[in-house]
Length: 210
Length: 252
Image (cartoon, rainbow over all chains, first blue to last red; front, side, top):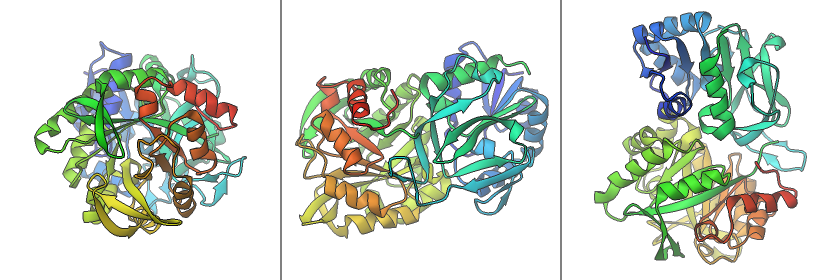
């Protein structure tokens, strides 16, 4: 039984997630795995992802990992990252794709031709370090209000139940960049690439006992 | 609010960081892993490594460097140089790169950009453009480290790369590179105005005002610089503090 399994469904740079977990928990047993048994038996699960939603869903199903991810998301400390957040919802506008439907709501694309307060053109993808306003969830412990995290995405989640939102960021309107439900926590930004604030969040996750 | 990014650039050859003037006259600047760590401590928003190794024999060195940096530095890493096929993109991502920059190969084979973005996502595909001014308000794309003219118009080329799936453009003025007299602001503005995706201004930053100008006048989403940081003239932190005093949103 490993301490934490990083679900490998063939998408994205999983080494970064692994390296960051190793940094915050040098003694933990970490598995980057596409093996259903390893994921099922892991104490915690990280569900990362990069790339397009239709590809991610297809690759997940091709590896037969849908069921095991659904189970993990309902039963143990579970951290979704980026597309790993978006896939938890019912539907994405990206390629008109059905998600896992663990959380109710949609994934929408940022509107083009938006501008910031200084009149600057807001690019899509939303790429770079943005401020995060967060609530009182255990995973924010020791992280400053308005701390900056690294984002890179063109789509954002809109949960049906606003009470699930654990943090927002502005681009230019506020959007949900962290959601939580019971044993599940998921973020739009990349904690593994967000220097000290990101490492702190990962450390909190590794110590979280929901 | 989203911060404008400062990206130190490390040109790497034979395991060392070097810096040239207008793409020639290389000068040694130190060990890449040590330098990467220093910039991370100073608050760099990302790091870009360009493998300028001429021979393919030394390709393994850049993988080892990226692996070492990625295990110690937790900010986005971009790697470019010598990327010819989708397999090269995969190998660099596996070594720990978050984004891969494609330059000459994008011109020789534009489909590579579409294939790589389709497979790994636009977020990790940066198209690097080396631009040289050929007439007032007209710039041409050059390849092969700036040695070969392509006849392509920079603005049109950048739009095509965006359409094929590039997530970001790294725009270098060959006329300004290493000259330390500022970015080509007209070039930067022409490209940023034409695109939806972020643009990194590169080539010519010689002082902190140049960095601020790249953002305010050039409209760049990020600024890339090498020599002003490598030889200790300024720290990344000083650059950010200066930009903040100019009203630019930065991560301090």
